[in-house]
Amino acid sequence: MTKRVAILISGSGSNMVALAGSMAGDHPARPVLVVSNVPGAGGLAKAQAMGIPTAVVDHKAFGKDRASFEAALAEALEAARPDIVCLAGFMRILSAEFMARWQGRMLNIHPSLLPKYPGLHTHARAIEAGEAEAGCSVHEVTAELDGGPILGQARVAILPGDTPESLAARILPWEHRLYPAVLRRYAAGDRTPVLLP
Ligand code: GRF
Image 1 (cartoon, rainbow, N blue to C red):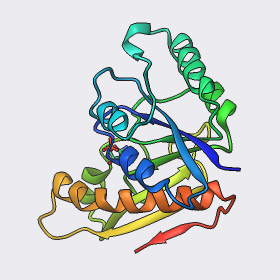
Image 2: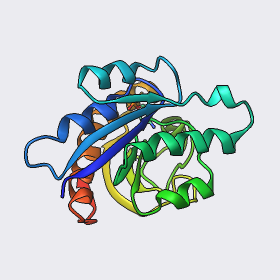
Image 3: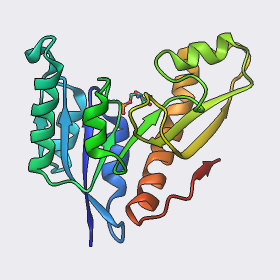
Image 4: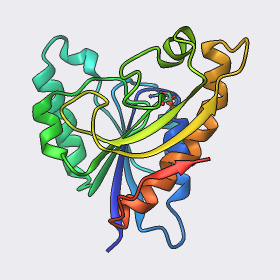
């Protein structure tokens, strides 16, 4: 049975494009919806150009009422009946209650070698700490922010003179390889971690 995949974005959607583009041919899954919490996010037009239905659930419209935002987000997701939900550059922190609903079928990509540097500004923190390498991780989402089981990692050397921007630019192409590779296995029920390069 082909798995139905919904993708949540907030920005340019480059990971979304990599995921959606990979789901073709004998791939065990297909994209059924792209949702953004930011109206006008660059990834929405890219998803529409790929023929994927899109939806916007603008968190700003709910002010501080997080529960109503999450209820609207859940409604948009459930309408597409996804088997798997992929967070791809989705920048809202979701509640434990929301996570519990999708536990065991929600993935996230994070631009660090978890469990190191959960949260924001990952590349700057790795450089400041004098790390020899950085990278990205795909993990299953749990109530702990960036804390769920790791299903894939790509390691990238930090070079002398690197800035957070130059490092991010070298890591993003690895995100676009790692996330599709993990999703292909995950959709086939295989949780064996993908380790790149
Ligand atoms: C990526 O580095 C991702 O790891 C992070 O946000 C960045 C934006 O990605 N969460 P995208 O182009 O919006 O997919």
